[in-house]
Image (cartoon, rainbow, N blue to C red; front, side, top):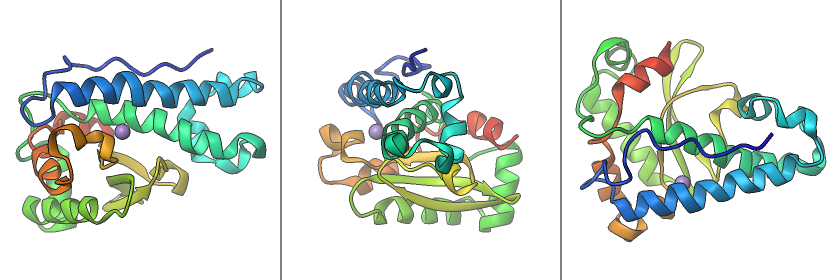
Amino acid sequence: MKHQPEPLPYAYNALEPFIDEATMIVHHNKHHQTYADKFNAALERYPELQVKKPEELLKDLSKVPEDIRTAVRNHGGGYINHNFFWKIMAPKSGGKPSGEIALAIDKDFGGFDKFKEQLSAAALGIFGSGWAWLVLNNGKLEIMTTANQDSPLSVGKTPLLTIDVWEHAYYLKYQNKRVDFIAAFFNVINWEQVNRNLK
Ligand code: MN
């Protein structure tokens, strides 16, 4: 059984002008595909792991055979993080959340503006490649970052929302201006999906 990147739930140009078509094409077809391919290659000699949900492997890396543990962490992480990331973006979305997530953000961050400020600062502050996340930890919302392709699942936290700040996510359009990419990202957040992740 081979893992394949999930298809985008919208067209490659659907997130324009905030995230450009060229970036979405190379990000999904090349970067994400490569994580999937290398994840599949790592699992080649372990058919019993191929049929497990990749998320389950990432939740307890200590159970993954040592010879492929780093590959599963990096490429399995890259594989699931991107599947998750495509879904938390959507055209004609963004702005302020509604529903349960809005209430939780108000409760745990003291309002949407404070949440936005903290997530933006976390994303901007990542040195090198990684991800900034909104996660659920023991019933409470938290912002955290991970380096490389590490998943919050590996430290027992539930991802709700994420922003990919690897340069490949923004360099074609924003070059070195990560701060502008982060600001643009808030226009494409699919809060309905974030609400589903919270359930
Ligand atoms: Mn990426």
